[in-house]
Length: 407
Image (cartoon, rainbow, N blue to C red; front, side, top):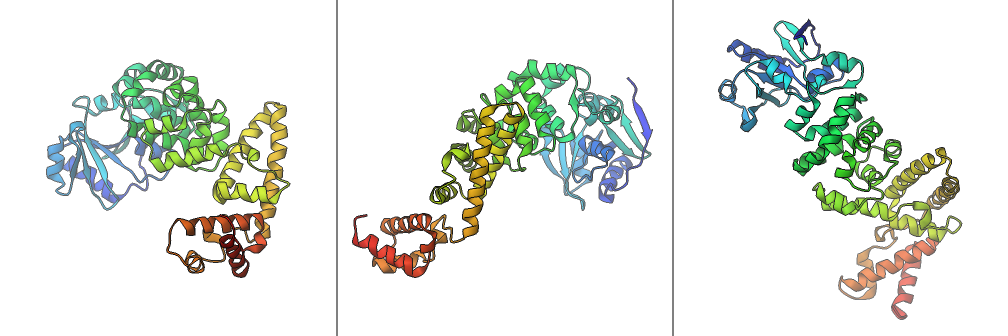
């Protein structure tokens, strides 16, 4: 294995970042750009997040840059504010030399460094070649690298999803063998990697890797077997993609285990309660369709249409007769929803009513409270049954009838 140094000058590295690296070098300390920023420069992708590795200990970095903030002294990391944004400066972690540091990074395409003086790429593990050939390979022993930080198991799948690369056989086997060690990783770190994976351009490849290595069974037992085909067909909305991935799983248990916010958990559960969408209404009856639109909300209705359409398209491609029949019913529901929306006067919530809550209070002659809420729900149901009654006069008349009769 060679310690390659190739003359290469990158355009577009911010002057403030170059100035930081040169200041360390002028003080007698080797300093280079490292990691994903260098990788993305090679890919021709705009980089906004730069990392620097240096032989200088953190105390020296803090002394050279008075505005620097120690954000991870246990790992030798100091954040230096610059005009180009914050830059993390980390002392060599695994030995006195840059090569020692690069030897313990996760993957070869991240074990890259760039020095401005002279402008050269430092690539001792052939990361540039792996990047060009679309291969994800651990630096040295895959088993050892994953053992140093089990989050790398999930990071491998995330990089497959982001970059469109393919994990090599050794890495894939090591992921399968080490999958249970993910339980030792802070859930917040896992959650961040999952979000990046689910929103990545090659999400299907990432999810397929998680399933092949059985890492998925550790992260989300019972997740949908067809997720690798369905999720990529959906808009890049995290909660919708979580719902698509977790069909069949115990959603609240999985999401709570990864410390998702209660609002996120509630929304994902709600989406799946309404899935499959075509079973929730009779397309021939506008009242039924309006009720479904009200339960789902218009944006979630469209999201659930996308989910069910993607699911059924995969089923039809597999030759399932039931999928073809369900697709026909879904198309009827979609056409019915479009018809209802075009008709206008669609009150899905009390805020859509032609009279406001304060007028209901006045008409009832009472204070704001449960009775007003019941009245507004009654009026909303009236408009769902007959959108033409959503005018102030007609709603006042319906309210008078409601007050006069039994609740």
